[in-house]
Length: 519
Image (cartoon, rainbow, N blue to C red; front, side, top):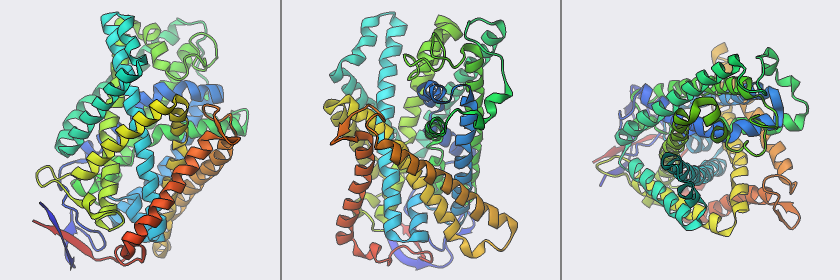
């Protein structure tokens, strides 16, 4: 078994960049290149899944300005991506947000930032598994032309059993390492992007032919975010848009396994962001031109179909045969993301354990696969248990937990952005580049996400937010969101009693010497 040697090293390097303040963890170095890293980032976001689940909801909130809101959501993510890139150059550590915020703001803020990432990922994993399960049975019913097979998804025991099987399969692939992950991801990401491109082309064709009564002519006014009718609608749409970009930072979590670990992950994240915004804009404009954003018929804002737009548009836009391919693409998207989303949570837990912020057992790396085996399996088990319990307790509770996800995303992204500016505060006057990329852009991104965090927190108090469930008169989404953050505080205080050295700032600081892995 690989062991950690805690002797300080002065000259250790990662791809030629001094590792003066990170700790080697035994991961498989050089397992991922630029393309593979970008594919992991795209896969984790799951663009086809995000589009089918939020395209209609966004149109319902902001109407024809849906493409503009996609651009508005891209802006803070791009600004935060610059922060991730600069921090990764200085500290290429798989703990990413956790490690960087510890170095900038100290162990307690860093621990809570890591908790925000972990709990957000567990929520997303459970949701992805549920969506993949639903589309599995929907696709099976479409292929066999047997509605009774599609109806199996409504059987709670069958649904949970299928969901747990998919979680187990995704955990097993992630457990076997980045090489196995890449092979699966190239196929699944390539498939979903190809089918999405076909859908966009056929939607434009239908729009030019005037195939649907609700279709519209393109207008540049769609790109104007200031045309949204109210700030409340804009904020709601922006929150959905931010969710659609979440997950691109998974390629940063593989930095210790990437060739050129100081630069490649940052470049890959920017490539992933460009692919995502291009896909979202093209799909949004094409769909809006084809069927419009109204609430009647095939309109994107129709509340009866807005939670699963592609299920409604697949046949009318692509025909019965090619429409099945769109179902396949959604299933591939959710399945691919289910598998890659294990990457950031397992590596964050590995880093937290390595730096004594969690029990040392999670710092073990598989000697053959060079992966955080125990952390990966634990994440899989936690996802399965979480989804099973939430499904059996109440569908409303599960829905509200997903609504609370946006709070976690804005929480740890904004902290990471602020950490960048503070970590590099002594370098901001060296050049205009340092000022903007290490200071101005990250702070702007952090402020935008912090604003969304606070506005969402206020909106969550209202019982009408989410499923409409309440706890003592307070919206259950608020209770779940704040409760999960409070749970993190409790676990942190318990951990502090067991691992006082980390919380005293004795293990990980801005100038921590490198510690390397020896067999």
